[in-house]
Image 1 (spheres, helix red, strand yellow):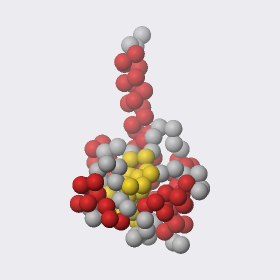
Image 2 (cartoon, rainbow, N blue to C red):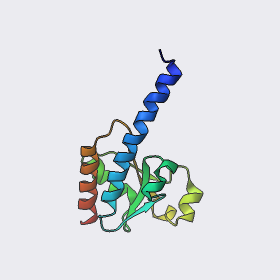
Image 3 (cartoon, rainbow, N blue to C red):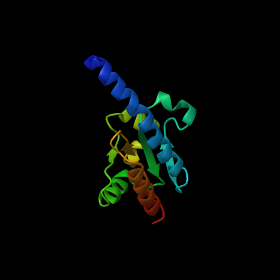
Image 4 (cartoon, helix red, strand yellow):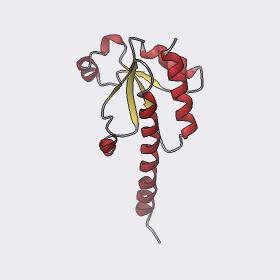
Length: 126
């Protein structure tokens, strides 16, 4: 019989590969949307160095506008600098509203990722 610690470790170990699969799908799709700039590691060989949360911008559009557009479609994201003001300033996005932040976790589905990509593509083209 496993200890609680071992059981939790095994459960966590099974969520990471799934989240990476979701993240890879998201990243692949984002690369096809005009004007999307992703911040952070994008090389699939280095995914173990990051979590499945992504920061991005869509052209010169304000991240709050994007978050509202997505929220109106039942897709919940965040916008701003996330208490990383010096990084936001260094990236040159602080005065432009920061970034849009998308977090994927074990209870998200591929269908949700696809809905998100479709909505972002729609937003980028309007």
